[in-house]
Amino acid sequence: MKKRKIIALAACAAVMAGGVTACGDDDKRGSGAGHMYGAALASNPQSLDPQFAGDPSSATVIKNMYSGLVMKDSSGSIVCCNAKDYSVSEDGCVYTFDLRDDNYWFFDTNENDVIDDDEYFPVTADDYVFALRRLLDPKMHSPYAREFACIKNSQRVLEGSYSTEAVGAAALDDHTLQITLEYPCAEFLGLLTTPAAFPCNEEFFISTKGRYGLDDRSVMSNGPFYVRQWFYDPYGSNNILYMRKNTVNERDDYEVLPTFVSFSIQDSEAEVRQCFKEEETECFTAMKVGGYNPKKYSVVGQKATTLGLIFNPDDKLYSNKELCKAVAFSADREALRGELDGDMQIAYGIIPPAVDILGRSYRDLASDKQFDMFDREKAVECLAKAKEELKISSVESVKIIVDSGTVDSRYLHLLSQSCQESLGIYIGIEDLTSEEFNQRIADGNYSIALYPLKADFNSGLAVFGEFDKNPCLKSAAGGLNVSESILQCPSVTELVNSYADAERTLLEQHGFIPLFYKNSYIVANKDNEDIIYDPFTGAVDYRIAKNYS
Image (cartoon, rainbow, N blue to C red; front, side, top):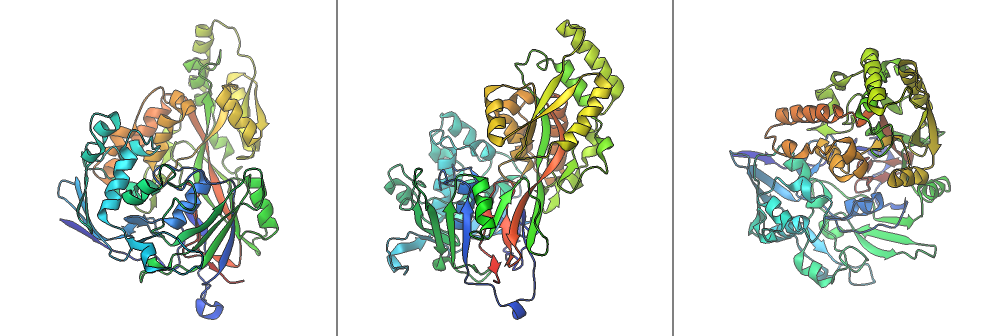
């Protein structure tokens, strides 16, 4: 049996996926503990159900409210959280977790901010079993179910041919959880760090009568904070979600420092920025930032998004594969080397640099230069074939639609000029607001779009999952599903190779042409340290945050 023992969360976390960090001398500055954080959400959370929710506002609250069996530490390594330790069978298919006996559910039932004995009770192995059964229940329609298809019988459960009781998860006793897989899966521990694998208490879930996660009376906490109040009126103002430190879950391996986190619920990212400007929130996150004095603000970016060209499968010209290949072969990314600022990086691959494997960027393990397909001669050959197939003598001009709220299109102009020189096609740029861009994509009202591809958690598996879930990317993948082969990788070495093979397979469809890796940012006042930002889920984690104002 291979044993892994508990490793404490680093006291000065540099990043989980990216965060505001400056590990200074606490003896001189004080502990930074006990602060009430003013925060802001760009929208009302859709749900606080970890097995279902996916929007950034929900992800932030869930991250601060729950905890799971394992977690990623500051280096990106997977360490124990609510599990004291765990073992893996020799065949890599049976995981046995020994749970901590000091992790509790807390449900706030009074108004005096005093925790009574009848308001908390232990989290048990049954709570993890029920969570996994809910996740894989086809009636639940969880967006994360397919990513857990490695669990024994999950496929038959999802198809409805087996009941959820057949899911390969069992409570051997209150503090021993056993999960059995269909096959060895190097991705499995990473999947267990995600909210989809957080526990759910069956008795409480049933008591909410279908409202689980939808209001402050229908949620429980087993993490660092609990929801004290959640008020939202879509026609009113002063909408808030107020969280308080969950003292029943204080533990020795790390200290939850803030006492409160008070979120104002706004209607847009622009309103959140205004709150930051008016010093009503300690930080904000965004895809585009600028003009923040580094002496006053901390600005940290992580390249978690891949910007690539997609083609409308119903377009009269760009539904033609040879024409798409011509564009792919004509993109001379090297012409941009030295032109890009720190916000963007040349991309040849699909997986962005922020995706890590055991604490190392996947792009360090598998260089994307192997996917460089720039070839002017091939571009011209493909263009000639396209004209022949389309029975046209020339290709009319086209505009690439761009979400100006995500990216500055000036670098795309330089790249489009390279394509024009190779193909003799005028390729213009049409900047749109985020709302306009998303509507045009949904309506199919575009020929070519610069599409921001971002996974819903830190994993190459999640990146490829977007090609299965997202209609416009599914078309770009040519109907291929590469996720299943990735789940069946038993080792990290095979996982890296499988990622690269999957990238190559998708790129050879020429429906998604990666051009840039793009930063996601967290901006905070310099008085703050250790606010941790996950650029994939959009979650902002305050559990070890410090404020010295």
